[in-house]
Image 1: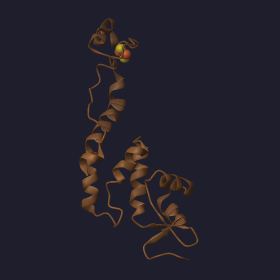
Image 2: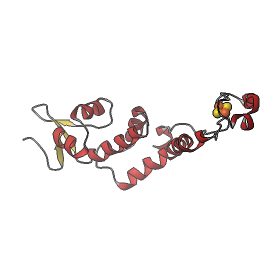
Image 3: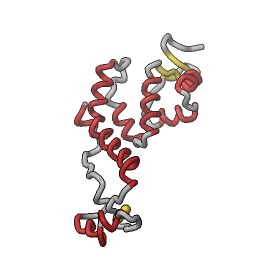
Image 4: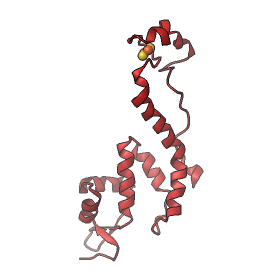
Length: 159
Ligand code: FES
């Protein structure tokens, strides 16, 4: 088998990562992972691809768009195995965007127990928290939720 030390076949990558081969091919088409081709046109992956796949899977679980993940992963060096410092750098780049997502998740978990100021006036607390939808004068959307700002990570700023 044409395989260098430290390389994985797509089957091995699939088995260890728990990600279907078809999904790995998709990730590759999206630029999330890369492989080299053997003389027989088979894919070979560096072992550190497992870490990239792990990041993609976790990001997908929390709803981060793949394009954003790809932009972040592009900040890693592709000519060597990324070091912990490389990973720290992209984590810092991503922090503001991830913090914003965490706030939204916390809002989903915690804030919908009460009136969110959305204008529906559909629960008993609305009459107190947003009588006659007075919050509409302050703008659109659920006015009682914490405003979250922050632009999505712009990798060009972090490179
Ligand atoms: S929950 Fe919609 S206005 Fe109160």
